[in-house]
Structures are given as structure tokens and as C-alpha cells.
Length: 62
Image (cartoon, rainbow, N blue to C red):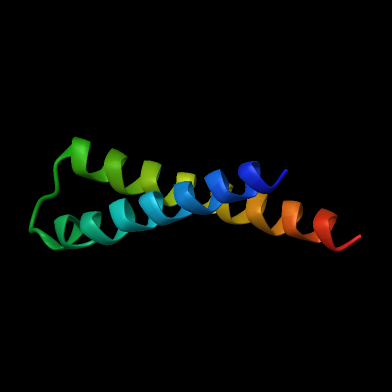
């Protein structure tokens, strides 16, 4: 269980880094489709990892 939580936190860090790197791409005059998909995908992955970490942490506290 601890390894799973550690991997979720690592994924949260990587997806957060990808999300931070994709933000400047959205401020171009006409962002391409790939840039929008990359930003949406990294935001979605960040949300999934964040919710998974919170749920798993609550189960640890029980």
C-alpha cells in the first residue's frame, strides 16, 4: 500500500510538471490541437492522481 501511494505521488508530480509546462502553450494567439489535447490530458491526469492520493490516504488513516 505504501508503494502504491508513493507511485501515485510520483505520478502527481510528473503530471503537475507537464501541466505547468503546458500553460504557456495556451497563451499563443492560435494554439494547435495538439497543445490543447496535451494541456487537457495533463490536467485530467493531475486530477486523477490527486483524487487517488486523497482516497488512499483516507484509507490509511482508518
